[in-house]
Image (cartoon, rainbow, N blue to C red; front, side, top):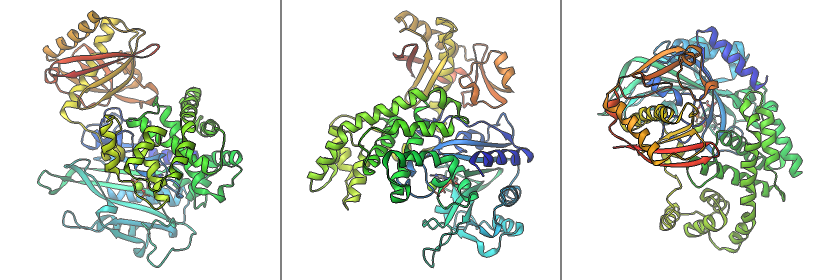
Length: 580
Ligand code: ATP
Ligand code: MG
C-alpha cells in the first residue's frame, strides 16, 4: 500500500464515522509565538481543544504537516524524522474512549488488514494524580486484544499535557506493531527503542483539568486527540522494518543519494537517512518562505542543511549535491503539495546557496578540528564564528570523539559577542503550544486593525503576506511596492487608534468559505481553509477569516504604536508595531 492509499483510507473511514476533513495548517504556527513549528496535528487545534467551537464541528480528521526539531538527534534510526505527515482524528467534547478505541482497532485490522496478533497497546498505569486507565484497557480487551498485550506505563510514557501549568490533560494509549525483528533481550517490549516495536498511533484522552493548586479535576467536556505517523504506518503496511524503505516516500530520494555518492544504502544507512530526512524537511520549511539564518526558524533550516552537507562529506561527496536531492523530494510530493512545484526554483536556490556557503568553510573547519586536542565550549564558538559550524554539529563531532562541549561556555562566549539572536530556549526548539496570553491576543486583534487601516489609507492592493506575533510586538508583511511616508504611517496609526477609542465589538461567526469570501472577508491562505470558516468582524471596520483568539472589544487593546517599517521584497513591505 502506498502512503497516499493510507491517507485516502483514513479520510474515508473517519468521514463515514461523521468526521469532517480539515486541511493541514501551515507548518509555521500562525498565532503561537511559543513554537517555531507545528509539531503535531493537535497543535493548531489547541484553541478548540480548550473549548472554542470549531467551524467544522465536533468530529475532525486531517493530515497535518509536522516538524519536530526535538527529534533531530533521533534521525538516523529506522522511524524518526524531523518533518513528517501526521494523520489525526478528533472528538471535541463528542465521542469518547469506546468509539475512539473501537474505531482504531477496526481501522487497523479491517481497513488496513493488519494482523491483530501483532498489535500491542500501552495505557496509563496510574499515580497519585490520576487512577490507572482501566477504562481504556478494558475496551482494548473487549475488541480483541489479549490481556498480556496491554501494558501499563507511567506518566512519562502515557500521559499528555497540560500545555502549560494548567489546563486539559489526560492519559493516552499508544498502539504498537510488532515487526519481524528478534527481541533485543528479555526486557524487549513496546517502548523499547531497538526497533522491534513500531509505535504507529497514539490516542490521547483529555479528561482532566489541572488546576492552579496542582489538582486533576475531571472535565465535563472531554476531548479525544489522535496522531498516526504516515511514514511509519506505511512501512508497517508494506511489511518493512525501516521507514526509509517505503518506495513511494523515500525510494526515489535514497536511490538518488546512492547514485550520487556511489555508496549503497546498506553500507551507511545513518548517513543516507540523515541526508534524505533533513533535505525533505528543508524543502518543506523553505517552501514556507523561511531562509537560513542564525535565528529561530532560519537557524533550524541552517542546521538541517549543514548537517546534511556534513553527512554528504562522510559519504565522500566532493561536489555540491543538495539541489539534486531537493529535486527528488519535490518529485515525491509535488502532486500532493502543489506549492512545492510552484516554489521549486526558490526552494532549490535557498538550499543550494546554503550548501555553497557551508562548503566553502566546512573543510577548513574540519581540518581545524583535526588539529585540536579537545573540543570545548570555546572552540565550539570559534568554529561557529569562523566556519559557520552550528553548535549542535560541533557537539555531534565531539560526541563521536568521546568528548563533550560545555554548552554554557559556548553560550557565554556567544553573549560576549553580543549576538543574542540564536534561539536555543528549550521551549522554542521542542515546540510549545498556543500562547493565548492577553498581550498576544491584543496584538492579534491589532493586526486585523492594521491590515484594514493600511487598505483604507493605501488602497485595496494591500494584502497580507505574513504575520508574526511575539509578546513584545506584532510584525505584518503586506503587498505594497514602496515605503510609506511619515504622514501615511501617522494616518494608519490614527485610524487604528480611532477604532480602539470607539471600543468596537469583535464578533466571530461561522460561514461557508465561499460565502465569507463573497461577503468580503479578507483571507490569507485560501487553499488552507476548510469549507466552513470562522470570520472575525471588528464593528463594520474589518472582516477577516481567522482562527482567533481575539479581544472582545477593541478598547481592551490599549494604544497601538508603529515602531518601524522595512522593505522586505520588491513588492512586500513589513511593519512592526506594539501596544502601550
Ligand atoms: P516516539 O516515542 O516514537 O518518538 P511519540 O510518542 O513522540 O513517538 P506522538 O507524540 O504520540 O509520538 O505522535 C503521534 C504519532 O506520530 C506517533 O505514534 C508516530 O506514529 C508519529 N511520530 C511521532 N514522532 C515521529 C517522528 N519523529 N517521525 C515520524 N513519525 C513520528
Ligand atoms: Mg517522540
